[in-house]
Image 1: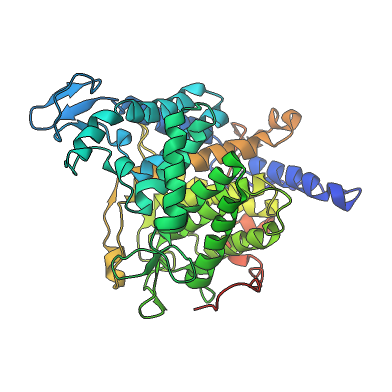
Image 2: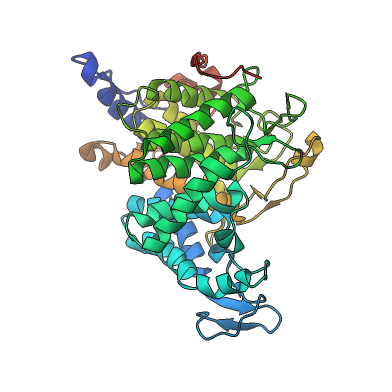
Length: 485
């Protein structure tokens, strides 16, 4: 691998404050994408190439069939089948699981980023496959068979059962106005706002592993749906409840000493858990981003929510490994480097920059992250080093010891989101300059134009390094907020 010195970008004279940010964004994006201090764009790290490779592998391994594991018989439809609780969806991607809700959102964004409708068609087909065959399983469930496929659709018993999959369904509903979809989405809205376990102050919680335990994960299992539902229906109450949750979770689990979030808050002991677990911090980041995406531009709460997101970005940026990755336990560099949280953080930073919520200086964090994450993609389009589903435990060793697998679905949706957001960042470069950006390496050869993430060792020469980030913004508590635990 060859490296060369970073070229200096000419200063931009800004005519007035109103035009300052767009000009700065264009200049800094150009600097970042033409920097040659790390790998130049090749099929090994080009976001468009890798996103397509990973997405295509998912398409190729989703069967849209049913199987009876006892007989190994497969079926393309449940119509005419004898009722049997043994009939299951064959592919893990056809299951009603929260990870597939993230994947649906990722596929919809992939279609937009790659300008290829086969990926949005995939997400639409998946929900149609489920709802078209749902009656077969619903009749069995109504008859007392509780172990049938897609049970969470029939009986919502937790945020995991509904929130993420409903958020993905709302992305599909924008294309397919199926009344059955909206009937389900209304049920989910009623469950989250009125039936889910909560603290006396209204903060969403679980009775697991203890009574009234707040999980960081649940911010994603609720807020992205609530925000999208508010935007889809125009019902402001969804936004209000979503904002309430974001502010409450920040009070309960944000750790001002580390700049990170704890995995849980135990209400029975008024204390936090032991771990700044990576993916739970990722869930918080994705949830806060989803709320800002949907919240009306003139909502007076936007500045405060944006400060919260920036505070989180600055916080987690300080724990980025020199490879660009983040660790399973963010503040424990002896824990393994983990792909799902890295993808979530890349997406959060790049999306916030692309939307103009934060300074474009921060994009270097996402590019460094991609330099590490892109190395976790196999030749056939699988993503390695993904922590499997993780419960809550009261000892730190549990988190250290969680297995990591290749192509666990927890990391696939976030990977698609991260890659497509970087594709969008690249598209923000001026077309005339983008077509001519080539870089000379130290031996005089020329590399292909495109994304070249800044090397952690040299990034500070032109851009603020993650560890040199400014102090997180101070967040003042709203007057109506309950006391900080």
